[in-house]
Length: 278
Picture: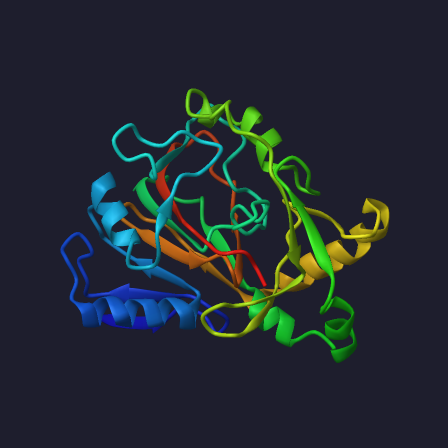
């Protein structure tokens, strides 16, 4: 097994490993350490069933059910994300951290490529710990006790619950029984495993700060979200069939690029149970 970084900010590609077979304790330990260090890991040329993907995901945490899309009948933790040739909008097409609107947001997410276009559909990732470290001391002091209000309905890039209704790709899969979610989380989050601090807001779900109006909050939210995605804090992953990405939602944002109109893309996804941000 080799683990090779793909950028200076975050991300590493793992090679020489077939994740469909049971891995040794030393291999799983090495993978988890790499996950914490690099924040997002990429695997190529893998062949997995939905059950196999579920088993592999348990290296990084406990799989959970996503609230807005019904999972597969036999494996409810696995959801299908399909963009057809007729669909214009894609799933996850803005910078965000998964389920940050929940009281206990997802710890991590795994995405597995079943079918991808010849080109297009890359995913961008950014390192929110690195962005925090580059803030001025004055800005760090300003943010240290601030609370962000996160919603599945609201957001400067459109809320998840509202957006799900507009995604033709999700017809038949959208979970109409899902309720809306709103949560309060610290703007500066401390990672429970590493102790590192990260900026924990995003335009998709954070719509204001506690004890401030939306109009008062928006300029600072815009500034921080634009700052976090500066090129030097990011990496870019080009998908191929059989690729897997697993990322740490506690210290990254990601953005699925929607540049493959009239092409089909089929992915499977699992989110892992997280803890309440501190």
